Length: 273
Figure 1: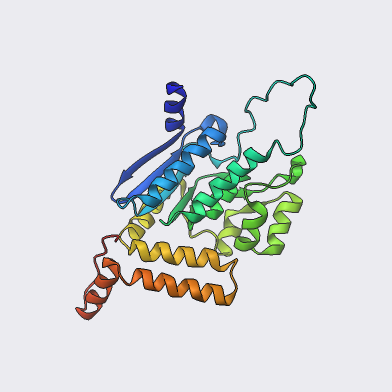
Figure 2: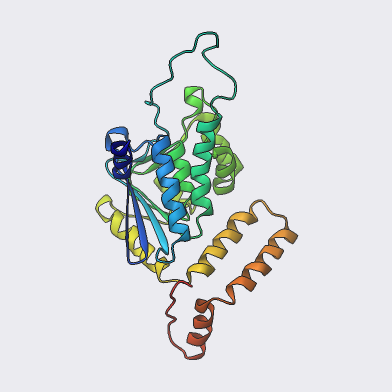
């Protein structure tokens, strides 16, 4: 059991420095596909990042030619059980909920999340990248939604996330025709923040993370929450949430520092609380 845990920690590695948690997918032989153990590890790391005062930004990146090929389809299947059918309605529920929980962990993380997409991000991997707050990508990146081409209903929150990120008709094009989105089109649509050569990807994502990590962390987290929830809220609810967020943030040290620096005509020095 210990060996399995250690293996997963190497497959989804995390280091923290200068306020930035760098999470690296390191399963190049599987194109960084995420099975249940890897998903649980990533969800746990995002939760830790969200609750840690020392962590103020998160970068997701990958080793090899792919960012994430989605779920790990090579996992062994259970042996058939006598007296029951090979397939039972609803038994896929735990796996689907695990994938949904991963996407929710990115969306709900109060720290800004950057996806450094080095290659293909497919299925769950595409949702993982698109759920991030910023996407920095290489020219080789693409976002593929191939569920339908394999006779599979899109999962990992695709039908919820894609219309909100891409718009309904583009989401239908990708999900119903089984297409992909090139990095050039994603940049034109404003989905990709920056396109850089592969050898510059880590540095570009790191520079953006460093900028975010010196910002007003609580204000950034509250703003992220307001933006994400606005997609599901009516105007009255959105305005109420905004009022509460402002009331919470005004008591932070960073809010006071922002006002002091403005009065003193200098750049603010935010500490993250």
